[in-house]
Image (cartoon, rainbow, N blue to C red; front, side, top):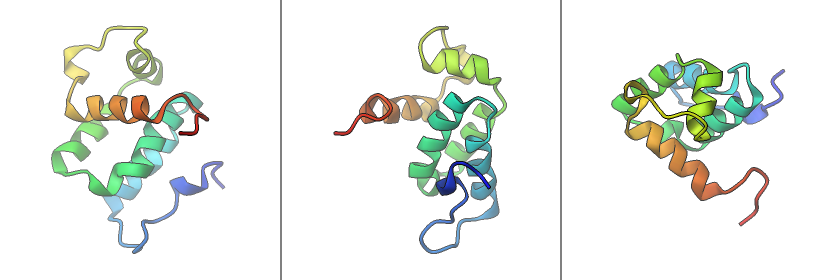
Length: 105
């Protein structure tokens, strides 16, 4: 059983397509807990709203190595142009708006 129960739940109607389910699972099972939280947290909130281009971009981001992706997302390394896209910026903005982990607004 996953330690992220919400990562395996269907959307309210139970009609989430197989592609979205697979992406959501991959977002929560990265190998690095920090990346699970960054990608999984965003995916839990937004997966059902993503269009085809955004799903494709998220699938591309999922091919990046965790250490690289984490370094880019935390600003420790410059983001290569190949990985920059509207969805990447949306993920960053989502977490900036949410504040630090555990922060309650």
